[in-house]
Each structure stands twice: as structure tokens, then as C-alpha cells.
Length: 92
Ligand SMILES: [Zn+2]
Image: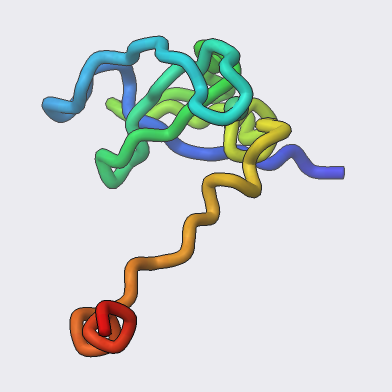
């Protein structure tokens, strides 16, 4: 079984936000925010240890990504807001 991994930026690299901890809105546990290679925030269960480092990119285990482990993860799949054309139908 191969280990799933995800690439994140080294802490603070490329002008990304420094890693920080906050509380998951779903399960209330502390989650550790890293930045994806695209600069988007990814929550982890803990500060992930790098499996490999290449320049300012760290490869880490995807097993700790909180979107995979959160018991409330289904609540994060919110329906997209309706486009303006459709929204008018609901306001009537
Ligand atoms: Zn959670």
C-alpha cells in the first residue's frame, strides 16, 4: 500500500501565511494550517513532518489532512450559492 502524500509550502515560503493553529468549526479540535503549493490553506491534525523537502516545498503524509479525518467533514460540503439568474426565482 503506497502512502498518500501532499505537497505543502515550507512554513512561510513564497510569502504564504505562517502556519497557525485554529479550532475546527466541525469537530472543535485544534487544526494546524499549512499552505498548499497553490497558496491555499490546508488543515492538518498536527504540524506535519516532511517526508521530503525540495526547495520551498515539503512533501508530507496526506493521512493527517483534517479534511480526511474530521468526523464532521460532510458538513463542509456546502451547496454552492445559486447563480444570480436562479436566485431571483427563490426570492419571489
Ligand atoms: Zn474537524
